[in-house]
Image (tube, rainbow over all chains, first blue to last red; front, side, top):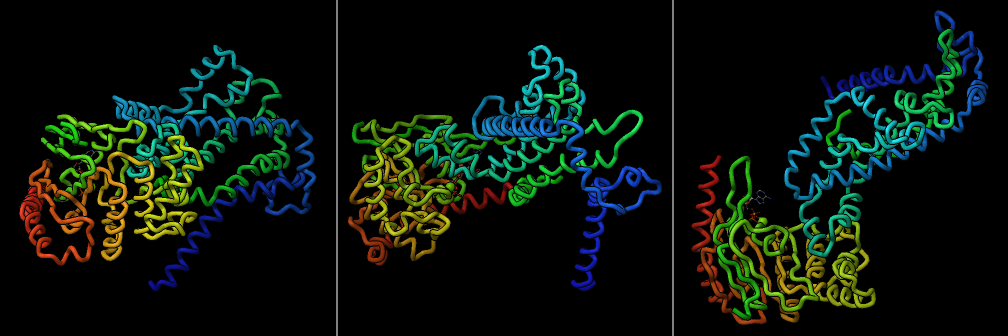
Length: 273
Length: 264
Ligand SMILES: Nc1ncnc2c1ncn2[C@@H]1O[C@H](COP(=O)(O)OP(=O)(O)OP(=O)(O)O)[C@@H](O)[C@H]1O
Ligand SMILES: [Mg+2]
């Protein structure tokens, strides 16, 4: 096959894959501006006959979404900040410091990756109860403020920094914390961006945990808030989709902002998603 | 014994390696006078960098003793120039050179003076505000040398600092290093692959054996100072010294080759 034909085939395949990936997203966007009868019509039509952008205003008014957004933002940013701090400290210790039994500690940490998150749900719940954190932001943030996967990623990044750089810094009078803060962290920015993004998305999209650890509207994040459009008997699809688009918007923006660092980070860490 | 700056006795270093042990250094005995310029040559992988890192306190020997004479507790004991990758990429040349002083709380005005002095000595005054990516390899090494001198260390450790630059630049850098050192003498341990370089710079050349590394031969370099790199190399004394160093070294290089062949 000529280079040209091969390239054409490649583009065709990539386009097909793109369409498949984008379809649910496009469907959501289109449904979000349909009328109620069109949204639930069968067989469904692709394009709305009437574009009802007022669905967004209706959805926004249906519940205190401003408050929900704020809660989600606090939860996501808090989790990101805490995760970065814990990952940086742990990864540094595991990569640089000579702690007896370091290999064993790292192995045990990695082993916890196979524990399914569902298993930790109840112990986490009980821990939060005992700490008296039920119905607090702390309960929304702290249980996810440390992740072995993040530690692993960042440790790899730290290990790749040249030994000479560390040696030079130490000889110039740099201590552990200063080296971590002034050298290791700035040089590992792409990896930190990945950690921030993945952690942020996870926290923003979390549904189950906030549902069980809070029971007031004051602390309800956006994903839980969206359930207002669903009930046992019926679902208000067009408003649910409009709400979902609003909930998704910050993540899309965040992704666009960190895209470049992200691609770099993925290429560098060998992480495949 | 007074006057000795560096003394090692039966110094050894072992690294754990896949359940076994790798003996990097064994029974290294060395005595260096204050302000002596000592060059170490040896086959690749014989433990030269390891030895230097032990001298710098970055690594601790697993056997034997190391004694470094501290004459001035206010000054750092040692500074190191690495083969590469040791200038801090996000700092300007000026900030790189002044970093150690800043870490030690030296006042900004004093610091500026010291930095300017050494930048001038290595010919980087015009590049004070440049970032490392804007410099050539040779210039980065100059910055590294200036940084090492700036904190006025009592011992200067250099690990093949000019190995990555081209030959003409290397000769230039050697001349520069000699000039800076003549006016600011300190004890230097200098590692190199090049016999010529060792003889041009050193008061003494130590030949290390293949792994496990120990000091196999010592050749005093009696060439007068100040030295000029180009003139020196054409003298008969120089040729004679080259032969003297090459002889013990050759056996070790051959030995390390056959050891590698056996291992693979
Ligand atoms: N941290 C370490 N852990 C395990 N082995 C090590 C470590 N550092 C060095 N070694 C081993 O010790 C031996 C000596 O290494 P070293 O870097 O000192 O050699 P070298 O003489 O500097 O070589 P070159 O001339 O190629 O720079 C090598 O076999 C190396 O694999
Ligand atoms: Mg080396």
